[in-house]
Amino acid sequence: MRLDATGLLDTAKYIASPNYDERPPNTDINLLVIHNISLPPNEFGGDGVIELFTNRIDPLAHPYYQSLQGLKVSVHFFIRRDGTLIQFVPCNQRAWHAGVSNWQGRERCNDFSIGIELEGSDTTPFTDAQYEILIALTRCLCEHYPIQDIAGHSDIAPGRKTDPGPWFEWRRLSRCLNSHLVIRPNDNEPA
Image (tube, rainbow, N blue to C red; front, side, top):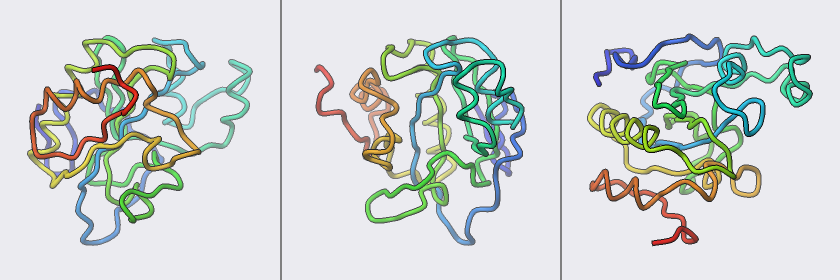
């Protein structure tokens, strides 16, 4: 895996999202935010997530999609259950994944973070293929940006968000990376 000067990854399929803008000047990218998503909820493999991040979701295709009408969101990376990696926004740009958020006293986490969505839900374990790609991607991002922390969406928006959920294996990620990063462990995760 290699990133180019704009933050595009050579091994990811690039599908451009219109939902991004410039990061504030002189802002270090030092946080990775892990999310989960499935559209329709708890269904995997369809195009709903791609359609959401590219503003093409059909509100009539599924009853849940009506609640997404007009939503303008994006993420840098999306890792499917089979390990397929899709990039929607170059890393040097600000994707709109965090919403109202705060990490260690800093608000507006979109300004200084890279968002990674895992195809999944709060009720389903993630796949080995997803962890393999997530670990490789994290290592690559840490080589190019001064990443210091990895947090869940639930950590930067407590009470508002629950992802990546109780099935995300924080200890597995930490063991595999074996690095200086502060990885938010899930206290309820089995050892």
